Image 1 (cartoon, rainbow, N blue to C red):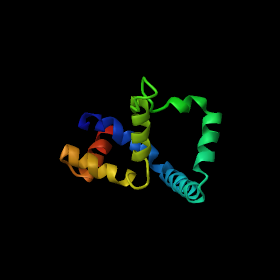
Image 2: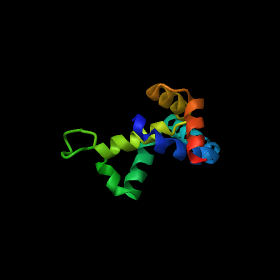
Image 3: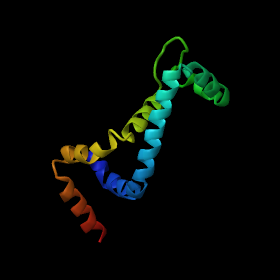
Image 4: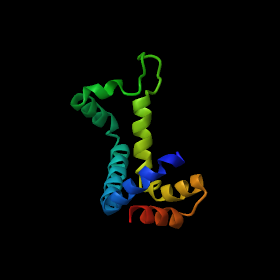
Length: 116
């Protein structure tokens, strides 16, 4: 994971201007989810999703519909969505810092020195 840091830091730097939009979108998604759950219209919403995107009916079912296994793709998408949530995204620099044993400032300084 720490070896991928050289690729993750530039990607995170390019995402910096989009953070406000990502936070707004994630906040809106949380509000919409709450409204759907509170009003009890989750099953109607789920029916609409399955009609609009029929391939989603098999996501997470695994090779056998009765097995109940989560597919690798569904797990990857769930992990990606959880990483870009407003609660987790600010923790990523500290997590990378813990993995590498370096401070966030030294990592960004090393990246800035390497690109200059």
